[in-house]
Image 1 (cartoon, rainbow, N blue to C red):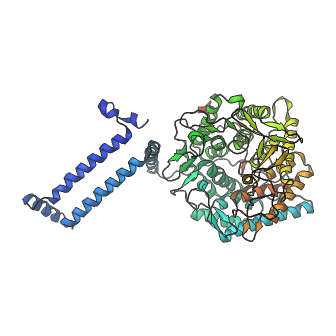
Image 2: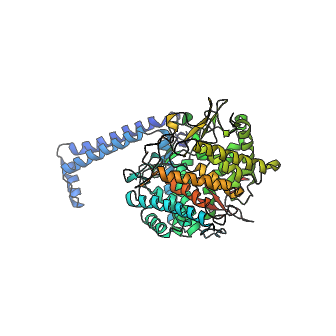
Length: 604
């Protein structure tokens, strides 16, 4: 639509109404006609005019023979036809994105004429508790050392068999990747693991990772990546590594990547596409998402990283992009006060009315709370939005089973599905983290709710043969906290249950959370460890499970980090000073005082 309105007013009414595809056909015919006329000149019989042209060519020192000129014209003609055909195959969205990318490149080239501008110096937030964290108790320290050894095994295996690849196949002992990273080798495991290596004191390994990033991490690749996954793993990981180590390269790389993600926001509503091509800037959504919708947990999980990007660069665009999303959502009607998981970026309307605190929804709620915490509790709008959302979730999604287990179901078209996913288990930690500051003196209530979710998720582990939790579990037909379908019985080294144990430990110091965490660590070491690293298993109810042969990058970023923190003292990354993104990358609280973020004034 935007392209069609760019026709000058002086154009004829007929031309102004032409469709995009018709314009390209006219352009194709015109270029073919011109090329044909020009080419025919060289196929005419010899005459004085032709000879004069040959003479002129000779005088100018050109060495083309008549035959080579003909070949060149044919090649140019064929290339022009091919380019026109490729243009015609592209959708309007792809063409608009290409035009926008070209405009951006022109603007960037103009900026570069003044020379590259270094990132502005900003005051480093107060960094507290970035090393050691010795628990004191020898028994606890022994457990912590074991977690550190597991991390070293996972890293060393990746270093030996999958270096530079996104992830590792520990059975086949080779690199692995998924469609969320496109077809490129971006070293996802390296970036994701950096901060874990740092806080564990594995500094030689950290240095190896830093050297690979300095020499090999390149975002100018023709790869379609998930905006959400690249943001939480790469930008989050690089920012955390920068704050922990002070090494400038991590900040520079994070900003380079962030600039590549911005074209994903070029939609009619400003709600970003799920996928973006890092080279062309063309974006689109997952084919399986409801009616071409963007996903709540994806476009709602950008705030923490983008606020830090604006803080570090002085560029207001990042802050403004995420605040625009918040403002748009605030204006929309919500069925029963719940946020559906799908939103169409073209129309700004909700897709299928499916609400979940697990996959597709989870980290949207987490980032509302953490936006408030990261702002030193000054972003009261984020806190109010979180409180309202949790109130609706309690009313419609949280129930108690016949056996007394508190669970969080999923709302589908007016019906509550009594099923809970492993991903949903993070919510126990979220409720505990958000207890302080709850409205109506409900802090005790939400701490208790967190404890009940932690207990339910522990039961999902305890009721399996391997003592590892399934991907999803039900609460009906007499079965509770147990997976029913075969395709929900797998464990892929997920962190959410251990994450909740750690938060509950920090807020209560109840020893059962360390005990439950140790049970999970032992089960992972016993059933998931192989000579080439750690692998997920396909059936946690089988005493002889088969492996899925993937060592996920989040196993090093999250699962092992939360276990290590569980057996460390509270002085290591204290929650008053650090907020963890949804990939467990710690970002410092921004004590801005009287400072305001660039662009924040425009949002009031």
